Length: 196
Image 1 (tube, one colour):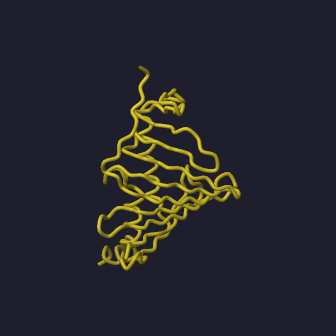
Image 2 (cartoon, rainbow, N blue to C red; image 1 turned 90 degrees about the vertical axis):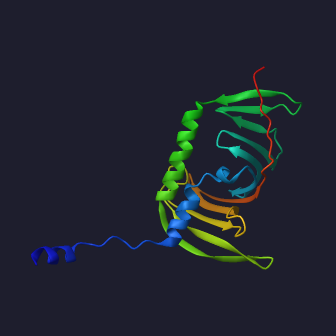
């Protein structure tokens, strides 16, 4: 009898929140697991608007092109080496890092984001008569996004893939807003520079 009373006084585990679990799943996922994609990244910070095109096959093979405010040569990241285009067909090494370290950093970031969900809200957003899944919430703290990251995912119900991600956070006292508009591109091919 005494044992039963003691057990009744112990706190029960918190009930699972399917929406928080859904957000954690999106935050912790490697989007390239669903195939290569191209994301238009629009970032606003301190009144400046920056636009990038990010074409990604994997965590170790992707290309970033700066489109605004001033177009810059593309940079290809491949197996731990970042290659800068000279816009004439040539490439030079910008920096190098061990590929396994980069993979570990990405895995750690995803784990940190997925385990840091503070709030979550699930609903839908209409797009041309189709209800897309809308999952949003806050996450924190993380090394990359600081004390709190407000994030949202718009997911295509036909594919289960995100088509839009928004992120709002404060970095070094500056408010940052980022919009990713995503198209999956199963036939995406990227340059594979080499030192030869």
